[in-house]
Image 1 (cartoon, helix red, strand yellow):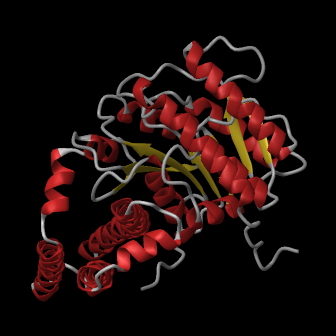
Image 2: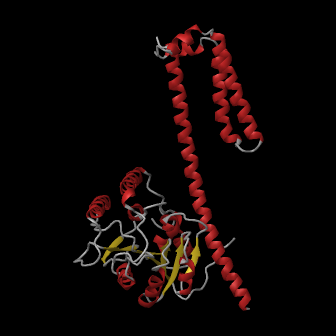
Image 3: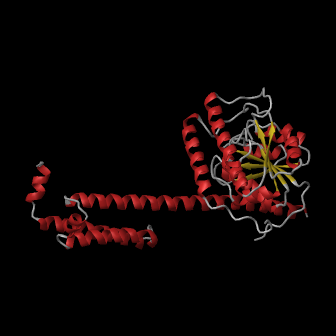
Length: 249
Length: 131
């Protein structure tokens, strides 16, 4: 079986993971097509029980439907597999719930190519002055812990390690297609890039309160989230450095 | 002494040994039957066969458990048995979670592959019908 490189309209892809987001997916897709010129829109429907897939397709997105819910990590990775197999050079993740403002995609793209070029640009809620959506106090505390930890490990100031609004260039796409955490992948993904000596840059963005649906990090699983990610970070440090790609020294 | 201990002390050791051997044989038969019906894979049956064999040996070989327990400094033979059984169960649980982890990984990869192939197929069919 070969997934050949297809000539596409664009070499830029927006990956929108969505699980039961029928209420907001149309707006997200429409906004990306409106404000992120040159980006193909791929909605990865992670086994939704509502009409998410049909609504997304009607709004003009290409839709890939997982046969059942595999979780945010598996769904997003499926998007990166698609991007890799179809020859996309840039892929941006945009949540289907309306938290991420597609107007910021252009700024992420500029940051990706700014000198020196980086492999991933992430949208940070805590860079610059913010007047947008603010998470709860408990959530902010957790976010601060991970930001400090990731800053310490990477030796670079990271203000928002848990942001899911991120854009990768080709090497990042190939890396994530190969290896991506199962659940709560944001923090680990940054460290994965760092382990491969690929650079990351943050861009100040404004996040909005979700317009529908529910966070995967509900109140009850917050301690599990903290423990899982902390443990994964710790084990990641013990793991032998992943082999570098052949064409890199 | 509790009532149970009294009862055990009074019971002729032969009964206990027969009971242990019977349980071991029962486990053995059950495992073989499950494998025969293809409900249990040989790979996972082996550990149960080993456990049944161990139980069988302990039942047949009188005094083995006591000797082993004394050798490692456990004064009461039943405690040695409990420790052994507990270690076995923990090891088994760990191996099961290993199996589950591998299966979830493969499951995820399969789901992704299926979703991508379904998309590709739909596209090819669209192209063909347009021609």
